[in-house]
Image (tube, rainbow over all chains, first blue to last red; front, side, top):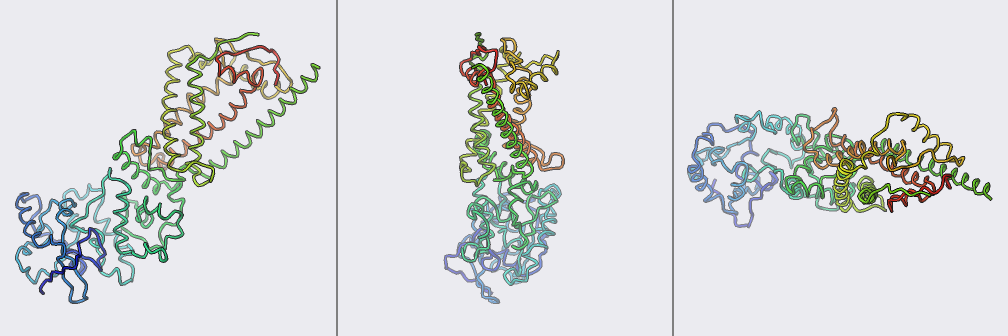
Length: 332
Length: 209
């Protein structure tokens, strides 16, 4: 099959829906079951120079923003463009293309047999020596993902959903403590919104029940409500919940619930602190969540005690006034 | 009539700054805590004001403690154990009973002891127990990332929040009682005037009000 250059102005976005906008590896990943590609030499065994020369070769074509083809089976446009800047800043920026992709891709035209190449994150990542020490265990992610609504749903839109549907391996990087919270939230939510367009339509948005929806969208990640609390120490679960199973309980964040509150508050605190330093943090503390200090028991008892005290003081004052009148009368 | 210089300049300055900060902190704190109620400050301003006032309160508190260490004001907070219970009872009985019978004040301030035993116990509790806890929990709120994830099996942010909240309520309670009790001097304004001018006037042996 010959590849066609489409000059439609379509640029490879950082993250995109598998169905509509799929990069080279996404395209293949959505076609078959995931298996790790392990036969390629590891990144460490190669010199930086040979890696970059190899990547330059690949990017000669793949950096063209309009490199794409139309899948003859379903008529969809498959985006093959890679933004070199995004790639070099991504978590995979240090890798050579052939660390993940078959080295025979070096031939052009690419051999026909490579068309069905499949790549998976879990296999490759679990092979790393430091896999057990990572905050995110890919085995756990895989387990959680299997129960995600993106896998269990019968909806045709999620057919072939894979890691790459949300995480573009050529652009993905973890948000880091110190980045602006609003920016992280925007980026994170951008992943969801690239498919869930209905959320941006006021008539179809299922979040209209939420007080101050805009504020929430700016300050909270979709994931904060749409994933269960993970019990394995990983900050966010990859088990994305269906809308109906997601958190609709305000007090889970705006009150006691320690894990959810901690998750939100601590994360925001760390970012805040790294971003602005001690003094600024102390003055501006952006992490405070409305209601986090509320406790109906303490509030009610304290307000009741205060009210009783005020009544007591009022009565005491009245008693003193009576005594004062009496002493005045006695004097006269 | 006698007049005693009981409250030195630094004590009065600290006291009124502290009083102002208390009011600001209570109002801005309530604005954060009960955010959404109409008569409160908006959320962002409340955070800024509360945190700034909190930092100033911390500095003020350290100033108070240091002042007590280096000046002779600290002696008023050293409890004399001899006859402690008796003095406490006498003062309590006066407030609970004698005051309605126009009984004479059981305590007369002097340069050596300006606080009656009940005041002394209250102020020690407030300044040496509640205030440090309030200040520590306030700062712990801001820098909770350095705390363990859980304290006693409960999320540490929540523990800190509840501690801060409870102490804040205690101090509101203290403030109300304090505001009332200062009217129980020789006249309604005796004690207030003393804290404004530094001079305590003891011109009546019998309470007027």
